[in-house]
Each structure stands twice: as C-alpha cells, then as structure tokens.
Length: 139
Image (tube, rainbow, N blue to C red; front, top):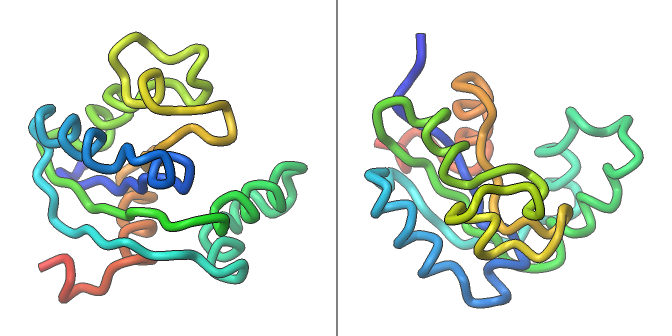
C-alpha cells in the first residue's frame, strides 16, 4: 500500500550553488508539505551506511566522497502518491535525460552531481527518512 510520505535530500552541489531555496519553492509549489528538514554534513562513515546498498558498485567510493563534500538538506515530504509524484518532479537521474522543467534539468551539474535525491519506493522512503530524522522530528 502506498504511503503519503517520501524522502529527499538536496545534494552538496545544489546547496553550494545556492539552489536550496528555489528547489524547496518548486517542491512546495508541486503540492508537497515539508514534514521535516535540516541542514547537515555527512561523515564518510554516515555516507557509507546510507549508501551501503551500493557498496559493491564501482561508483560507491566516489559517491560517498561526493556526499561528504559539503552540506546537504534532507527532507521528509508529504503528499498523496508522494514517491511517484516526487520522482516525476525531480526527473531522470541523468540531467541530460531529464524532462524540461524538472528539478534535475534545471539545477543539476552532471550525472553524479545531480542536485537532489528522491526515494524510489515507499519502503526506502521510510528507511531513508529514519536515517536522518527521529520519530519526534517526524511528528
């Protein structure tokens, strides 16, 4: 059963480039309610835990290094059909293939520095949100 929450994080490139405000404005304009938001810097250990599912992939270390390179903005969002609608809002992982008007098309630098993460399932949204936020913060 689909839930009405999803997880996202604005990545270091977009934060460093000053795109946090415009990205959040676009998220809210699309009807998402922000349930939780904070600004944090991941340690190498935290990045490794968050991306453990990719540990055997050749890009794992590069991804972890990138995610530790600057501040990120994790958020939990709420909206009916949240995961699917948010994936459409952010666009394809590769910004060169993302549809016009999507967040990645507008704000991403490259495939690796693609501005924003979006959970790919309700289950992962819950896991990823719990990685960054306590139950009290999600109330």
